[in-house]
View 1: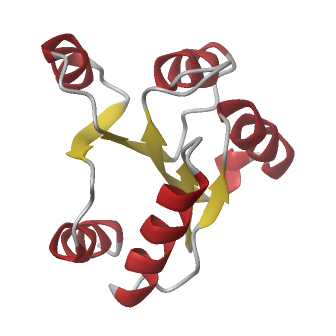
View 2: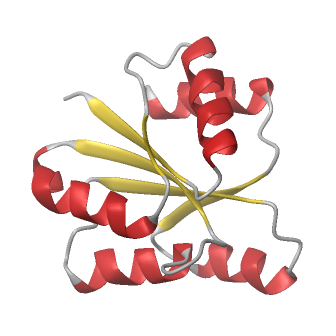
Length: 128
């Protein structure tokens, strides 16, 4: 089964850079980028995500729907089957890091700016 990769971040430049780094790191398919949680949610709902493995790289701090609200909505709608979530954040708040580590739906938290070394490590994990 192929794995679909989504990058959800309100910063278009971060989306573009992160996408390119994953391409350079050998990700088999191009990531799909979204600039808001609601766009990504609508996409997942249309895709019926239960049929495919999906990895989401999710920014925590976004307007309208932040990363935590996005995760809560996926959980409420029972859409977390076959979804792995990595938080990508520049947050220095210990509360965000604690909450990420305690959240059963979050695989890991990655600090921005993401490095090429880290994207290669993540591609290796995704490809298993």
